Image (cartoon, rainbow, N blue to C red):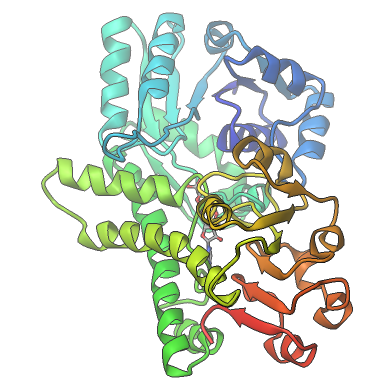
Length: 434
Ligand code: UGA
């Protein structure tokens, strides 16, 4: 069974590579020729643990191919995944589907009389699958195809593991023929007793938005509880533990921090709000959490300024971590992008270190000193701010770095340090939720 994966972003590249790892011949297609040329040479456009090795292995073993010729690849394929971007529209927060529809049109023009299953892997609003079917039928009335929705639930930083061992696979398909194809694609996972849930297309499309919004809501809930903890003397870590042990709630996604970021939660929560409005069935919880999260990210800058005794003017601040989470170089909607400009407007001098995010960061942040290590960033700094919980920051010992710093202030927005140890080392230690 030949697969075409359209789009070599996070979802497309990881899914395509993992399907090749399952043993299927996969061609990953992208319009950006430079990206394809690089991929052919084993140069991966993103940082994702284990991905480079897996791409190289499958390419060498003759199952993974790269091409900028969509039509050629489509003609030879039994299954075509659409995994192009669905960015947020500035005007109203809805998902911009222009790339999805453009791909659908191109697919339609290339379809032969071979039966083809066209699958949306991108996160697409409810109703998109049906619209794609209309576009294809209009452009190629004789095409023999079915539309399937198969949203992806992988996380950046653990994408391969998430794809190969998901909690579940969700498939929206409405014909026996397309279901048989999807069963074959996910046979290995079904054999491992991973639940494969078959639904209507609309249901599958909505499951993706509901999942991300629910997770974003858990994070937002614990963030608000952490504010309350600070006021009332409770400890958010212990509250989260006590909460999460209730199996109905679960312990994951209860880590308080500076607000959620990334390419998915902010985009998908806003899109769900729009989808619900369009159907005249508002999701007020989602509307509220979008608002809380935006304000929270901005409020973190005020928190840092307060920790610096009300002013950061001419103070040197070391910032460790700028990516939206560890183990990625992705800066999309990272809290750093809300916090750093406010510190700069208030006159702070910033020294920044991130293990993987500085190349992306340099495209978005200017007038800062980029450092090669955490030690270089902290040297002579008046204050230290932790924005991302990379492992290498959790292993730093406050008593060991205190002498290279000029000041004794830590603002730890990811709770990576032990407060007792930081205070014993002489720091004025500020963290989240205690
Ligand atoms: C998220 C979902 O977790 C995936 O299931 C989904 O497939 C993906 O979006 C997507 O739609 O493509 P991702 O954005 O990679 O994955 O990252 P998460 O690990 O979910 O983190 C999102 C944000 O929430 C980050 O800013 C993270 O720091 C924050 N977060 C997460 C917390 O602040 N606390 C937590 O306990 C968990």
